[in-house]
Image (cartoon, rainbow, N blue to C red; front, side, top):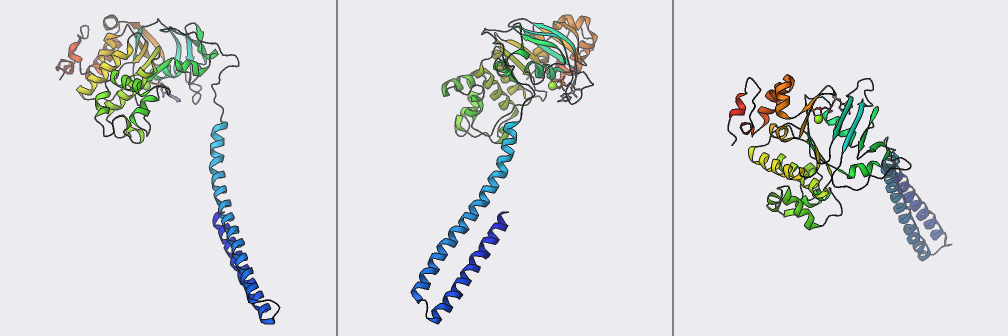
Length: 364
Ligand SMILES: Nc1ncnc2c1ncn2[C@@H]1O[C@H](COP(=O)(O)OP(=O)(O)OP(=O)(O)O)[C@@H](O)[C@H]1O
Ligand SMILES: [Mg+2]
């Protein structure tokens, strides 16, 4: 459109110019027009013509902006499937929260036939630490998605402090929940801005305090511009452990009563692992916590372990109990945790027959 407009405008301009000069020259030769008058007219014509050309350019810009705006408007007008009810219930303020999964069954909208969570019943007491364990695809992350209300269950309901989250404003529900996930999402902003994402109105001082609690302060201070250092798109300038500690600092800053942790499967080196672990432990104090556990140290410390298989809970108990009565758990501990835990040697695996060789390696 723009190229076409420029072409038409240029042709019209020069066509008119040549036409006028030719007409004027004829008149001057005939003696009905003076040379000065022709000159005056030509100057006016150039002024008008140039303005017309500038306007056509402007029209082209407008067309481009309209094209981009159309997509923005499309996004703005998109209606989410999960909307706050007309009269949302208010969740009363409290220090720590109780969570209750009441017979929840769920299948993802893209695969309606296949239930990913089946008759999931679980009551989590205020301040309790729950570890979710199960094979890949068992539905552990899906439990988090439901609690964060990214989806509504097909059957059953989820209650926080006896309030059905489907009847509350999703924003209120999410305000209660802090999450540190497997993959940390960082933005192409400074370190401070990335932490501030946890609570946009936080002051610089609060950000530094949160970073200290997350054991992130030391490495951030050593960056070129400290807290103002640009972290690069998706935080490409940080290591895995550093990204995780930024995510933990966000959660510390948010200070939520409910904490969801999805432990990273990719193992960090022993030193960053220790720092991340220390930061997480501090974060979990006095909060109702659900952890998707990939480390032995986490399951050992949890108040209760929920063993999942194919969307079902197959057992709930403490580490020692489960090791003794649940062969599937013992097997999983052997296969999954022992090899991924740097602290393997600190925790006895009594009850597991073939003690895995790796757990006997002293942690560095
Ligand atoms: N958005 C989605 N749409 C359709 N199916 C999905 C979706 N997300 C997950 N699933 C399916 O749901 C099941 C449970 O997935 P989920 O992510 O909860 O597993 P998980 O227990 O967290 O596994 P992992 O330990 O590998 O993270 C899987 O079979 C998966 O294929
Ligand atoms: Mg998962």
